[in-house]
Image 1: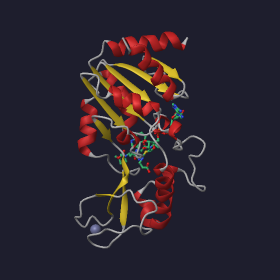
Image 2: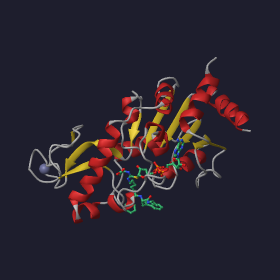
Image 3: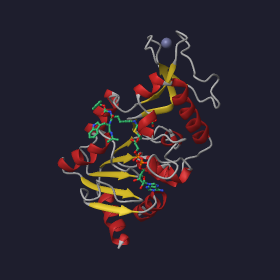
Image 4: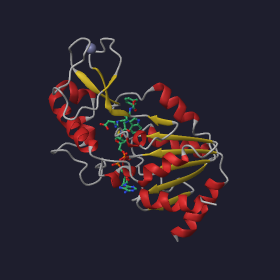
Length: 247
Ligand code: BV8
Ligand code: ZN
């Protein structure tokens, strides 16, 4: 069964000039990065939605920083897997290919992905919690020099450069992501399609006439919406389709 589906998707990609790929935690699973809702999604007894909020940070910045420090330490040891490599290759091989990621691990960056939109930010960017005017800065130190890390300009608390629940997504990235929904093929890979507005993009692409497909280990709320849903590990499925695309 999935062979025909893989052939069909390969055929659509072969004929496409504008391709948009949305990725989630499932793409980094094979690199050893825990997903949010899968096993390992919980840290201590907390769900991501409990800690990844401005409210949680103002209540207990040290706790929230301990969680981000734990993720930075874990992800610093991870490398891109074949799923990232195929996406990176495709990002340079179609007439226009946009990669929209919800992941904050920057493994797509490490894989040298072109036209990458990080709509939820990055674990390796920090900014000033007080918004003193200091521009966000890059920090890959593991462990962090101090916990919590401080703003080099005003000495106040620093915060992780990620988008928390209840916060709006970065305007430039979201506008570019919305524009990229005008495409021939919209592929969603390794995401549970629950967190909005990112989860709304596949519907926008479908309304715009794109051929929509989902590659994910488990069915999601988007599975019934897309033209083609193929369930399996992202690294195997993407490598398989890439193989079929080789003339
Ligand atoms: C906002 C950064 C304006 C931080 C993240 C409409 C309807 C309902 C709710 C809302 C709505 N609009 C807004 C909301 C509220 C909220 C929301 O969507 N809540 C959800 C929980 C219902 N959205 C927001 O708050 C957004 N902001 O809307 O601002 C506004 C403001 C106030 C009020 C209204 C509007 C901000 C959302 C961004 C939050 N930040 N991350 C951090 O990382 O610390 S979200 C974070 O969770 C990730 O970035 C990602 O987006 C999400 C996790 O999802 P996935 O990546 O898909 O991971 P998950 O574990 O869930 O699933 C993994 C999948 O992979 C699974 O399906 C599994 O089967 C599969 N898989 C596993 N292994 C593999 C695999 N697949 C393939 N291969 C494998 N090997
Ligand atoms: Zn500051």
